[in-house]
Image (cartoon, helix red, strand yellow):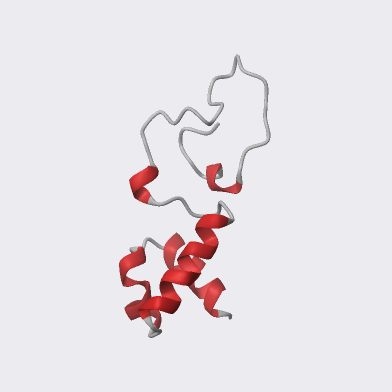
Length: 79
């Protein structure tokens, strides 16, 4: 598996981004670049930018379906 894939897997398992380097045994700068890659693609959302009741998702059944970014999949507020 590639370092990028391993980074994504670790993030999805709940490893904090600040510990990815230690977890994977890679340089901290490389780990940060990998995390940044997934953030730019919208596959990972930094916890500091999360807010309860996010306004970007369409959780109400009254609203029309819209295409959501990959970061919304699995979110309990995105139905």
